[in-house]
Length: 170
Image 1 (tube, rainbow, N blue to C red):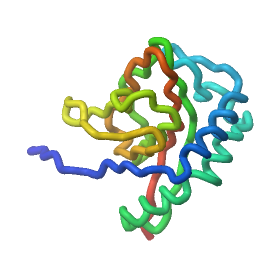
Image 2: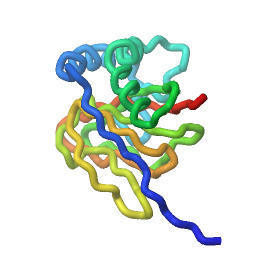
Image 3: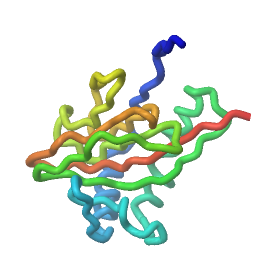
Image 4: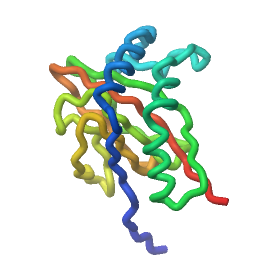
């Protein structure tokens, strides 16, 4: 059997009115209970799924729809679906080790706060880190099976909203 690697899409989309949304989202994230994992400073990943997430309600209703609609057009899909959103904040030496997202086609990261362009999510493709340029206010979308990680953050805080997405064709 011969296996050949084929190119696939990595999307970078910019959120309109990011500065307005950033302030609102950070205020809502600050209301979330403190739940730490071993590697990142604060996340709601381990918070009970029934706990209300006002920031996600705002994010879904005011931020992400136009981007997902553009992606749907790009992929020539009939509809899109978001599954399982969460936030993560990093600072003071915290990071997130290499991992992937199972049971999803696409992984997405919205850079709500991004101290430096070198702090973007690192994505492995064929055992090499994929190079891309993103800035605060961007959403990156990439195949969810790829290993990716958040590099160690040192002084300033980095905040992301991550979510999985799928596209359907009828």
